[in-house]
Length: 423
Image (cartoon, rainbow, N blue to C red; front, side, top):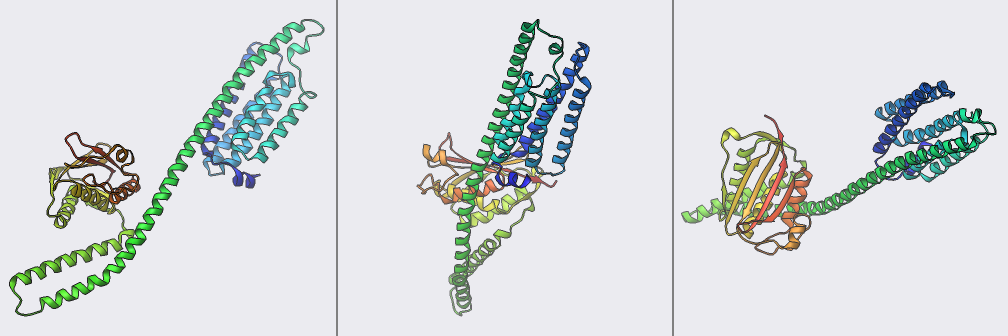
């Protein structure tokens, strides 16, 4: 039975469904046990000992199912076995308490409803056939209720009224359990669908990132040759005699810039092998900002650096820095040569960075889609591929990026990143 179940079971969180069925079985065992105590106190002539054995057996089987689930047995197999045992236990209880005339016979529907919702059609129909056969047997093999044993040709009206009351109570119990079961399973299915949609979105993002990574790798390889040629030309020119001092200074600057380009290409080549590394948070941010401003000397970054005593050692993925620089470049292109940077450590371990450029406004459509899709960048808002890449990278690091129009003008980018502290 296990193979068809695993092959055809619908896309549900079976662990949560199994947990719900275990709780329901505990509740049924408790209700049956409590009812036996009431029957005993009322001195009803019922087979209390066999019924108590059924209640204890259900509790024992439920405990066995729970332990097997915790030990890694397949949830779908345990769920199917539990539903079958529910049918058998209910048939025994009904056989000891009046057979098919017992209003509790409607409880046969509960395991069948759950099987129809979470099990393959073949197993559901097989379980329905078993329940139907057992119900039919209860017409012929059962122990009559005490009222039926002592009622001859009189007082049939009292017996009928008791049967009607039992039917009403059974309907109320069944309606509540079915509503709870179906609504719970529908919520589980809805949550599963939401997670699937998120997984599809992440897969689409991963595919787009893969394409960009392949393009970046190809461009990196193509840039290596002209960069090496420029290094050789720079060396030859620097060895040329009788060059003015101004030209020598320009060649030294060009050599430094070429060396920096080579370092950037080298980091790009090894980016896929990047791992989290321990750094001092604000010290690393200051060093990275200094490197970035060497490339963008026309931009002024206003950042009130926290005191050294507030710095913390953390594990930070190197992937974070390109995401931050994309935001900074976007703000620098859209702004007026000035960026305000705000940093703050939250008590829950999140690191907040705010990047505010003083120019441009995002439209309502851009605000709705900000950070989620690629835009055609229209200055001064400047919302394009870099922002989309930053959003995708931060999402992979369990962080997020939020964009909004600032009350004082311009666009405000808010970055939240969970950190792993070392000390």
